[in-house]
Amino acid sequence: MDWSRIPLPDMRLEGRFGDRVIPAFASRPKHIWQMVTEAEARQPDGEALVCGDRRMSWREVVRDATAISAGLAAQGVEAGDRVALLLGNRIEFVLTLFAAARIGAISVLLSIRQQKPEIAYVLNNCGAKLIYHEADLADRLPDAAEVPELKVRISTGTTAGSIPFETLPSVQQAPPPADPVEEDTAMILYTSGTTGRPKGAMLAHCNIIHSSMVYEACMQLTHRDRSIAVVPLAHVTGVVANITTMARCAGTLVIEKEFKAANYLEVAARERVTYTVMVPAMYNLCLLQADFANYDLSAWRIGGYGGAPMPVATIERLAKHLPGLKLMNAYGSTETTSPSTIMPGDLTAQHIDSVGLACPGAIIIVTDEYGHEVPRGDVGEIWIHGGSVIKGYWNNPQATAESFIGGFWRSGDLGTKDEQNFIRVLDRKKDMINRGGLKIYSAEVESVLAGHPGVAESAVIARPCPVLGERVHAVVVTRDGSTGEKDLKAWCAERLSDYKVPETFALGTDPLPRNANGKVMKRTLREA
Image (cartoon, rainbow, N blue to C red):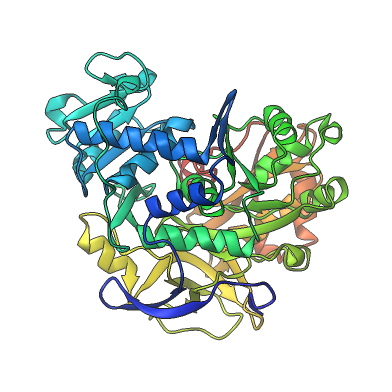
């Protein structure tokens, strides 16, 4: 099974990053700024950005981003320089991202959750020349002596040692737009760094454009679509699935500072939102609102999700309340510029345990420990190749060589590929539980727990055992605190092999710890 049932732009094979040959869309913008100006040409007066009471058309976005690029140039920023953004979800984030692209600078996206040592490491590793930061995060910025290459600090407000952003755009005439080649790095996003130091994934213009076109094609997005950003814009889902995809479509991006279910429903109804990409827990929290049925969400037609399986009960309830909503699972990472697979919306219910089909232009294989492709249905490591796969990590050739082979990115995820080409992700290699030689994939156990009516969410991890090596432990968030361990064990025992049933539980009502991209932080649970 493939994407042949929907109209796709023509594709061709082409060389990239020296030694790769990849399938890519034959007709496409050359770089991000061209994609933005094409949106202006198609929909000059179309609504581009909405944030609170502020609204901007595509003409105004191009005008303001051009002015900001003049300010950046006046501060000495040139093509190839790194511009760090330590910003929450706000219109200025998008405008500065586009302004940096206009002059050929590289945007380095920082999370507002990062602390001073983490920020100092990233700024030094990438050699950032300028940082634009939230005023209330000024105390997290390293001292000048710690980051000698950082020459300019710009703040959202008045902050000692920083230039107010408001004074930036009116400095001088904007320079002519840069003309970067497609393989030039456009953004650097640092991975979470679960072991060792974070690695700076280099997203090239061609990677970002390809992924934006994948979202556009597979989800059939047009200029009439209205997306809402409730995930951080500084992460790959926010920046690609929301910002650049809406630029590709010339659609509208509604920006929310953070996700709060009641506020989300109010804004989504008022703004007639049509397209979302969120984690399953966000959909669940919406359904848990007592007045959910009172909101007019009839415009909502595409519900993208990823990071965790969608519970069957959630799919059924959404189908009941919103029959026009197509849920589309997507699987990817920073290294693949987000989507590597997408589940066609009309197939989600039939393949609930799958993350979908390889995206157009993506080649996905499942390999054993020697790098040999395994038979269909067998478990192995997922390797991904295609137009969205990045060229490597900034200033880290060793990590690049370890993770990229012949244009394939070694995901570190264990999964399967069936006869119909549906991909299933079972676990991270490091999260697989080995109970006396028996392999247990946490995703399978979590999927069973998700079906229990009293479970809001769960995470299954290994618990050390001197006899068996590891045993199965489940951290479960219950809906009302009334669900007990005995009940959950019985539920799992009816649906799983005996060795897969969790032997110990930690029950509570507090949400699971998640990183800024919405993924459960299992390392934190293991340490606890």
